[in-house]
Image (cartoon, helix red, strand yellow):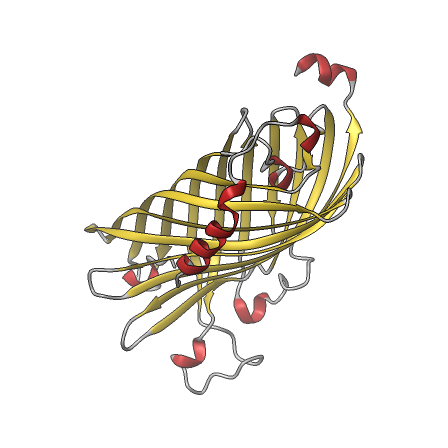
Length: 330
């Protein structure tokens, strides 16, 4: 069932170019400490609640296959201090949207992430594990299937494990990407910047089938990415930050089914856009974020394989004076 080596949708290149041209003059500026307020010496704890509408899609002339995990709402615990920003995410069953296992099957989700900010660089590393998926368009394969009554067609043993990250560089010293990613800083004056980045990840997908066969796929993705981020200071406590990005690069896959190996390589187009609205005081911060990310490529059989991720998030956190022992340690 080689259809399960999936990943992702359409193009935002025109909006990316337009957005970049509008703000291109903002990308380089003189460094001014009054434009960015730092909270790196404070110990911050936060929690994020996010809704990820992740859809793995395979298109060809005869088939549209939509594969989704049953983890609608995820919770992420976050801690930030000095150079470290670490987080742990999971999908608890008690949250709405995660408790309909009878129809969609059981799914699990775990994610660990680290952000580092050496000067104008940004470094992200993550580990993500998902297990249990269902076919969202089950009615296309079973005409008598009834939504809300019959269970979806499921791949309960399909598992995806991913290691990855990205390395980026903020071209404008007066723009704080850290303010958006870790909330350890706050933008005091409106500013924007181009952020070139190198993205990389390794994904391992496994699935035992009912007939006793076993499928495994390893995927390696490398992408050169360019994004533009802008932080508009509405008031001293409220910011609105849109962004748009796009990237290209190779994808390598190795699929093994009962000892038979198939290797492929693809050229991938990656894209995304979104915005964030934030509220900040010296202690309390909160906000909402919405973004869309995805990528698309064609297989040797001329199938268009896409992945789309609509992501909505609410975050809230509080900053504390760091304990003396922690100050001495870091």
